[in-house]
Length: 210
Image 1: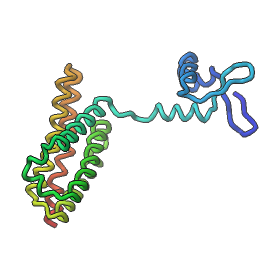
Image 2: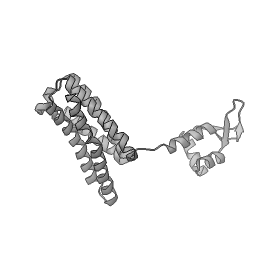
Image 3: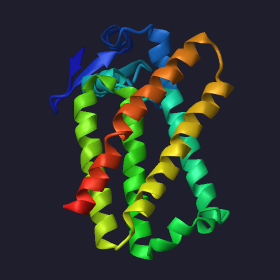
Image 4: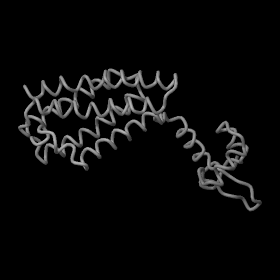
């Protein structure tokens, strides 16, 4: 380890590999791909800033979304976009009761709903916090419904329509990614998402009545 005149600590390839818990060849490959910043000494040896290596360690430690859950959200987004672009929504009588302001507001809340779904799949340990967030989301749906003079029944139909898109997305991916382990994952996912989204509709209804 070398300390520069600026106070930065520079590590050799071996020291960086030890800190990362990786083989030096792997760290060298990352450096070649510019995945980790490095510089070369006049003798051609690699040096790594300790701060960069520690940043990489923090990055590796951060929880990453399960690829399957990301695929689910992408699938649902695709279904929603298609419903907008192919005119499907325009065929529903309830959709005609949403003016431009209400549609834009619902679209924003829909994105937050998908984010909530993604976090539900990846962080089931904070189920109570997620339920509270779902209730707050339902209240916002209800407030927009009331302010936009959208009939409550149509707001419920709109929510159930998009909730069905999520359910169908889960079932479709369960069929594609079949196998015992995946079946268990999707069954659990289905129940987790329902437990959270079931909180939205009652909150929506209550918000329109208060």
